[in-house]
Image (cartoon, rainbow, N blue to C red; front, side, top):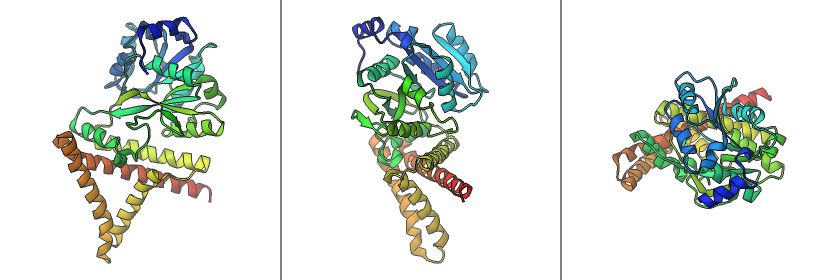
Amino acid sequence: MSASPSDLKKASEGRLAPDRVLAIIPALNEADHIETCIRSLMQGHAWLRDVALVVADGGSRDDTTAIVAALMTEFPNLSLIHNPARVQAAAINLAAETCATKITRYLVRCDAHSIYPEDFIWQVAQALEQTQAASVVIAMDAVGRSCFEKANAWIVDTPLGSGGAAHRGGRVSGYVDHGHHAGFDLAMFKSLGGYDASFSHNEDAEYDERVNQAGGRVFLDANIRIQYIPRGRVTSLARQYFSYGKGRARTISKHHQRLKTRQALPIFALLASVLGLAVGGLFPPALILPVGYVFVLIIASIGVALWQRSWCGLFAGFASGVIHMSWATGFLAQFVRLFARHK
């Protein structure tokens, strides 16, 4: 869905007036990305300069807030609020409660780690208007700058990286159970109590589950695509996916869900590898489990390097392994914690 100048002019004069839309960027220590993010969101038709754009900062210790403050002189519609709870879910809830007006209809969520296409905010709001969906989710195309970021980006949008999630590089629009959050019908968002702010991660999937239970619909618009910059350090990537795994365990426990196959596979890979290493000394054939897993990652690395014609691709299997093992460890750690709590 692309926005022509005439489309935007009609929208600004009709039902989709800019004061009916509120865009929010949760941020915490995003000095390396926040300016690029904001400038990309403001790129396009003048309509965008009349949409309230709020950065909800969770107490950044770097130059994030200083950068935003400087940009506020260039973009009068940009504002900065403090999010004392720090987590993204609380940031969205806070902005929805304190920055929305009586005529705000749509909420657009933006990620400080992303680069947005021209007229992104309008496209998301227009998709909400046309589909009347409770939520609009979008496709993510991972891109990297450093060698490890590139390898991470190349593998994460494949089945070996993300398990084939529809919003990870997906090309088909339609109604889905879950996807990368971009926009909400504000009335529905508030009626469901917004995000569960006790979730530091996976708050989006948990919210989508409540939308589905309430009879709402989640629409994936694959024509609206963003570039996402993945973590460039191994430790950061591991922490990110460890937290994702914990969040997924909480969502499954809260809503009594079953694991999907793509979610169960990393857990199986971790348990099988640990078991193989544990008993391999007594029963050497068991070593085929961890060795086989590593072999798959090595083949993936070689395949990505040849596919992208870059030696950086040799890190792809390693990045995939970090994603799998960290996610599975986080999931199992949270699952054990929840099980012990309910005994």
